[in-house]
Image 1: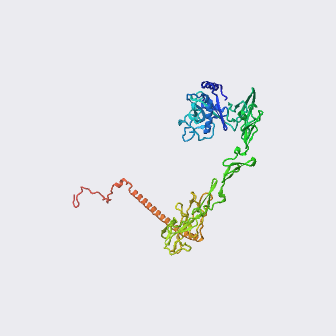
Image 2: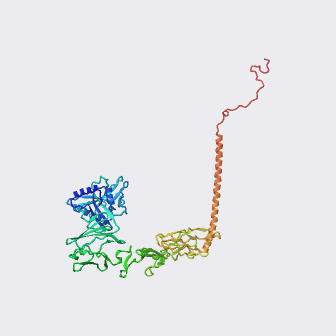
Image 3: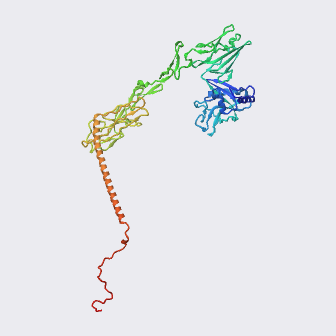
Length: 610
């Protein structure tokens, strides 16, 4: 790894404390990724910069398999340090929570996210509940027990805590783990004789023992036989789309003295001795030797699993190619590599309703029908006799029809709005004197025009006219909805004594896929009767409306007059109560005629001289 001089000095000090033979880093490659474990007391940010400098990130742990690869790298790093003293070490991984975000117990990652991005997988291995503080950044480290590092089931636990700062790292965090992803891997080189292979990866890690070698890595091979040394250099290349291999041929470091006895001659499958110190590699039946003269590949074109999903690969004769086959109920999609469901209902395989399912289909019967028994054929639908004894929902007469039924009432009663019960009373101006032409006979003499409905206590009733039965295609699906036509009471304008019963229409049922519904049909006679009754009813309704309006106007006029009267009376009373003038407090004496001269009170009495 490329490090600064300061970091290198710190690593050397750590190596001196850990003991001789402790490596600076450990590398484990598997699948399409490599994991490297490093010593170094760094903050989480410094560890991430160290990984990203060579094209990686702090490691993700998104599955148990990935956790084992990281455990292997830590075991390789810590193996020389294992002693009788059990100590715990922490190593940064790329799981962090930004400032302002809190611990969320409802999420697998508890509000944390991977620094390298990617999906949030459900795999977790938390040691304990974290702190709910949201005021600072939090980071996750693997808690690794050095004494238990060799146990395969002791996967490192996740421990969250402060992230540290440059120059002030977290005291108990001893290192970090990086992850590097690649488009493909080469197989390790096999030597046919004594020698040494040293791999150098694109992230500048070196190792002589890799389970898989990442694309663009180099291999330095040094062969030694009887004091002679020979060096080779190879590069892991992409030979074909998705195919990665070395640019080498023939077994490496072969020895005429050892032949096939040393590492099987470097051959992947069979090694054949030539008897004169030479040997060659071979492959088992069904495989072929590749250009490197060491590796074997299957001759079957299906060895690379070209088919996807449920499709199964079938080789063609002489292995000239392959075809993908689908299980029953599926067919190849346009790519010819994967399968898609066949909609069998397009071929109308059912007598009534067809429900498509993945890989198959099922048949259902409409409302008013039931599947036929084993003796009559399970794929047939038979009419349900709703009027059978003990099953009839009607209060009086019941007539079964195909897929439905209708109820009727005796003379003197009429069918109620629920379509099954009868009510007594007249809607005309006089008692009924007979029945209308064309009435059903099910209710006896003088029976009224009945309505029909679909009988099922768990479903809403459906009505049809007795004179014009309706055949339609309902469904038994749970999402069936039924719409009832409102009933109308018709008042005839003709001869008193004749009456018309409410007429109902058969509702429309909306079912699942493929379900069809036919609207009810009404004959001309019933339409004419309804039209006449509707006209008379409209006239009567208009009369009632006009009478109500006149009554309301009269009441308004009366109220207005009363209001005016009260206002005038109030004004008059107010005027009478006005304060009087000062003169009104006095009474005036009647005016008398004045005498011409005031008599002298001292004058002699009349009839005297003095």
